[in-house]
Image: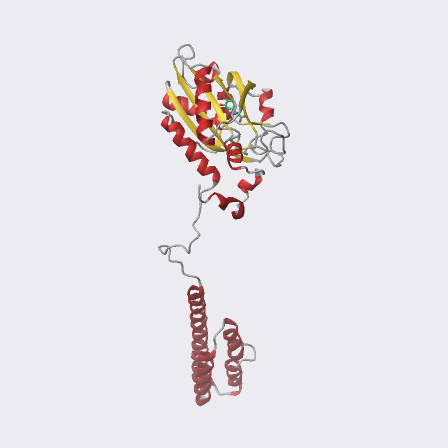
Length: 342
Ligand code: DAH
């Protein structure tokens, strides 16, 4: 019997050495320790033996059983480790310090134009501010003279969060924080992503970029506003663009204007981008409403200012002749990599 135990041990070790998968190890476990396994059969075979023999042989067989269990568990671990190592070896190894194979990446066209605008405005003494995307109702509406239940809220179909905050619908949401941060006088621009629940088409997206600007000082007037807008546009487009100013209503400015440019996609003939009007609304603007200055801690008796909300996404479309606004958020490299050399 002892010899049998010993040869079983050796047979087991030999077979274990052959296993290369968890499934094979499991098969081996069943073959030795299962209901009809060899070790189990040995234990069963003890039934007819005398008491002394039972005790002695029983110990040997149980020792073998424990050993088999342990060795099986070890083998499972070894196989798992080998599998992980194989995966690591097979994974592609990137050396980030190597030069690229010719094609280099490029900035998104919105980033390119945003930086260009930042440079233009910085050269005119404006600071560039960043602002969050999740804002409070106060920042987005109340602080810019759109009280609760004001019908102007209907113009901006807003994504509200469960906690009462919202995704900013316009960069004007930063006006209050910036007025409070710097006080008057101040010149600042603040580009940012905005969100509205829009039905999307060639000229509407639910996610788009604007660039807001404010200038507050003593004796700021509409002529200052027009001067800065014209300077900015001629530098961005590097050519003369036809513009028109018409009255527009926005609760945070008085008076308020729509600054349109002649559509550069169709040359003013009319196309789907300009809704067949030949004009594109590019930069609504106006003189900051006294209530907005007050909310920002600035005395409207002493200071006046202008504000504008440039449609950065629209500007990019006009500058590069992008016909469909959806291309810009698409992640489509064919569309976006055209700007590589800008
Ligand atoms: N916040 C407005 C919008 O997104 C745009 C706007 C209009 C901003 C007039 C301004 C402004 O600063 O003066 O609809």
